[in-house]
Image (cartoon, rainbow, N blue to C red; front, side, top):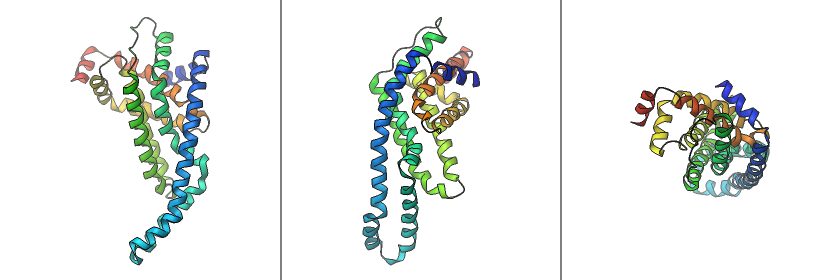
Length: 244
C-alpha cells in the first residue's frame, strides 16, 4: 500500500499529470470559491435573520438550545472561507475526480502496467453520478461533524473516518469499473472493504493538507489504480466470489 502511494506521488510530477493537474485545480478552485461563499452566507443568515425568525416560531421554551446552536454557528462562520475550504475539499475533489478519472487511470495503466489489457473508459454520466453522490454525502458529513468540532476535536475524527470511507469507495470503484460491470466492481469493493478503507485513509490524509489537497483527484485515482491492480491480481476464486 505504501508502495502504491509512493508511485502515485512520483507520477504526479510527470508532464502528462501536470497538464491534468492544471485543469483539475482550476476547476476545483472555481467550485470551491462558489461553495465557500454560499456556505458562509448561509451560516451568516442562520446566525442572524434566521435566528430572529426562529425565536418567534419556537417560543420561549426552546430559547436556550437555540441560542447555543446560533453561538456554534457564529463560531463556525468565524472560521472563514479558509477553514471551510478544508472541510469542503472532499466534496469538491469527489466531483472533480469524476471528470478526470479515466484520463488519470489510463496514464497510470499505460506507464506501470503496459502488459495488461487497457481499461475501458467509464461513461461520463455514470462517473459524474458517482462523483456527485459522494460529494453530497461528504458535504452531509461535514454539516454533521461541524457541531462536534468544539468537543476535543471529535468532529475531526468523524470527518476523517467518513472521508476515508467515502473517497476510498469512490476512487476504487472508478478504477474497478474500467474493467468490470458496475455491480461486479461494487461487489469487489465490498469483498475487500477493509483494504479499501485503509487505502482511503491515505487519500483522507492527503485531502487534509491545505493547498496540496487540490491535487487529490490525481493522487486518489492513481493510488487506487495501483490498489485495484493488486487486488485484481488475487486468485480468480476470490474475484468470482466477489462477483456473486
